[in-house]
Image (cartoon, helix red, strand yellow):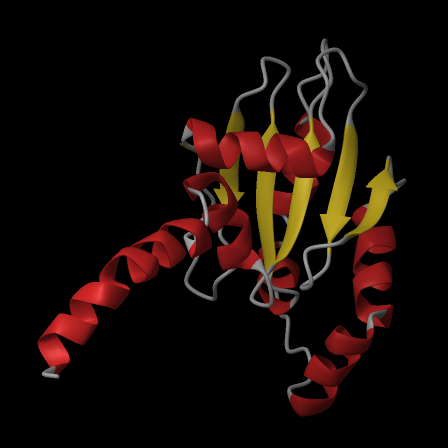
Length: 163
């Protein structure tokens, strides 16, 4: 039997497998961050502009890059904005995420309308490591710097932040 007819027999099964295995666009965004970046989600509560954390994060660009932080904001209306991509050449930005990616971020943050402001830190593995209202970003930096993978990063390539 020639190889071509055999392939025709397998084609429907291959097509079904590819459809089932294909991740949705909503999960693609979060999966792209996994093992590359530590998402930091600032949830801005109703009646709060989140300016304190935003100003502090913008004043600590080097710390964001060194710790590979991908900074996202969830606004009171539920819109999700990327503020910093976490790459060495990244600039601060205000890029609204498409609805599928925003749905995923809101789900990971367990966002509900009318919540209080808080920061959520996720590790390289995508799991939540912190949720709360830190007194300062030093609390977040210290938490990250105690993580095993961050300690390994520092061993290989010491932090050279000079802002």
